[in-house]
Image (cartoon, rainbow over all chains, first blue to last red):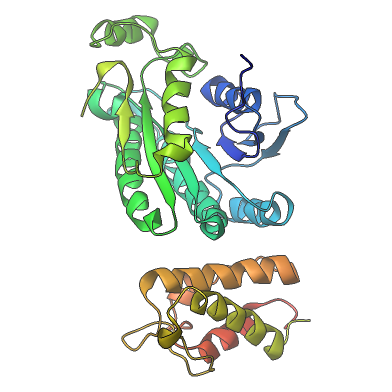
Length: 240
Length: 99
């Protein structure tokens, strides 16, 4: 039996698409037939006929507005958004520079908000849309050294809940998949022994795989999930 | 060049889109005095969001103008630019480049 692509006509925005989990998610949607619009501060790392990349800082409201105004004229629609862009500085609170703390709030929290806001304006006309935020186990595990990062990811859960209410009338769902540790470049910024200890303490004590994440993304993105919104699914048995 | 007539057309087109989804006996009046925001508003909160985003989108798609109608300038005004169709039109003409 032939595999039928899941997203043959979909336009999908993936932020933080240049590396790590975002690059994997963009690749997943491309494999499933979608047209993917990737965003990141750096240049593209994906070459594919159905991929276009925009170098933009999602925390820069003006730049993002200008980009979405351009996308309204070119792509004309956005069906699915994956708010993946995030930065992590892991450091004791007493040592954390303000610049790093502010960067995490701007990218991890406000970036997701700005992208959701602009995407929802395009989704509204179709009375359908899927906004999927990438959360983190840090929101509930509250690891030492990750005060601001964990707070931004906890805020992501609240943002999901409120946006879900505000956008429900337009047929747009907003959900979060809160991931556990994956083998990505972001993980390299943390002491390996600290990560291993966290993973060993999970109800399912292993690293997440990309397919674990795709599974939940596909569930949230499915047309059958129009009645699923304001939800956060934690991987690996983590719970709030 | 953006003119009063062009802006009126954009705003009324957005109102017509809302009317298309309303009952025939519950239509929004097509008038410069139609209240959009406030206690006397003819629109509910979702319709108000729709009007503002529809007008922004039309200014972008029809005229190539990237204008935010809900930025600090608008929110800081003692008199809301969203009060009526007329005040919204005046505000757009005021902030649009080339008007």
